[in-house]
Picture 1: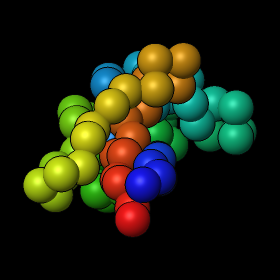
Picture 2: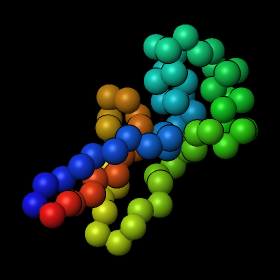
Picture 3: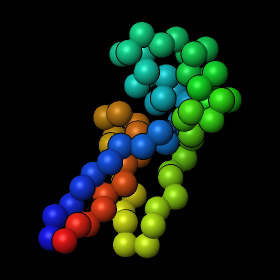
Length: 69
């Protein structure tokens, strides 16, 4: 059995999202606009039964880990 880790659009905080997107040339206001548009989210994502939600601390971004046969 293996595990697949998938990044999500969910962040620990708005500041974490802004820091993540700053590296891609986005301003703080751009990130706020992404939040308002529903492109990103603050807080952990929903997960299916059997999946694990984790936090990539250096990015402040949540991931979902899924086990595959």
